[in-house]
Length: 151
Figure 1 (cartoon, rainbow, N blue to C red):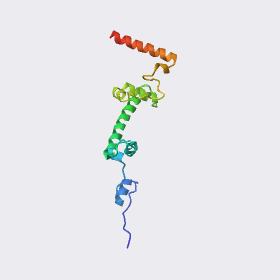
Figure 2 (cartoon, one colour):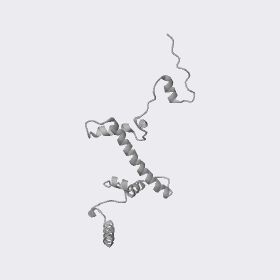
Figure 3 (cartoon, rainbow, N blue to C red):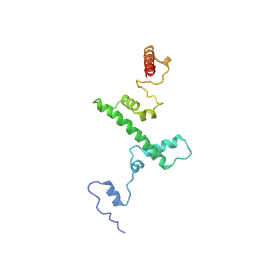
Figure 4 (cartoon, one colour):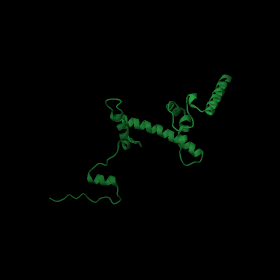
């Protein structure tokens, strides 16, 4: 019994051609098949670990990964535009917060989210503020009420 010759391997290091020559299919991730950058397997694992339901469908993780990727893309795009406008090289957390608060769709999506370390605190009890912050808050609130009354 002699060994079968597999033929000459490609010289340029093309892994797909090597796999094809060996008769094997090249492995590809669920994210690559769906055309996503976020890991579908990680989303699937998080959904299963959360135990929201007894069963999780195969397409559910793909859909969740696609939605999260779309939201991330919108946030990073808006923050990146602000960074370019200010002629900087890095996106900071304040850029992300500003991008979310200034885009109406993202602001609605993140309406009940408080970002840690953000300079803007929403719906904070006056008792938790310093005296100076409380006075500024009251002045701003009075100005807004006056503007509404004038309109």
